[in-house]
Length: 278
Image (cartoon, rainbow, N blue to C red; front, side):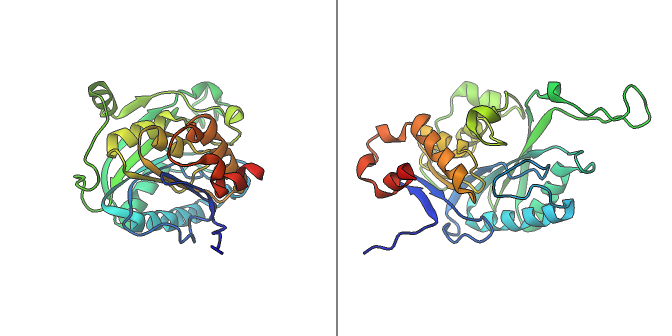
């Protein structure tokens, strides 16, 4: 009898959800991934089910260096990484997150390409102003996040199908490094920090070819896998929390409609049955 891999939450020929810790998983081959699109925990005390989002800042940076190092080995020589992170943070002390993470990326060996500024437009949700209407100690908070774009060895992509599906308008709009679109509703998705489908969609179409392998090492609610599937890429997601794996899987059914294609017989797939039963 074939042994079931307990770390594989769901798998078909184009998609895989791995229920495991990014720091220890052995489910990803080295030099296998074309593009990584991810938004790691921000360490601002978000109430995740299975992650401590209240590390000291120095411990947080150590954690980031560890998982980013693993990602470096998983990328192909011409592989890219799109890292969605805050510009800075003031919860628990002011820190230059974007600058510090870029420094870590370079230390690991990534080559820097560019930084996209995502204007999420969430300034209306501000609650902290520091010293109100006084020069004493005001808080300056930019309503933006960053998408840091780096690569492993070579920026020119030569592997894969070499088939792009981006339109002229998309290319012209998205190569402008200021992206403006709204964030995603936590209540709607059922995850404390989901990112909108538009973010991975732009990264995937701009930085990868059709049929490339896309990885999100912090899958969360599954936005990256949904977008990969919708844009004819293969998607792999790592998620430590089984509850979030279920959310991602259910979104793949409802939003990506993975059970309506001809990729596999959904009702005869034993992994699908196990997920649906649980």
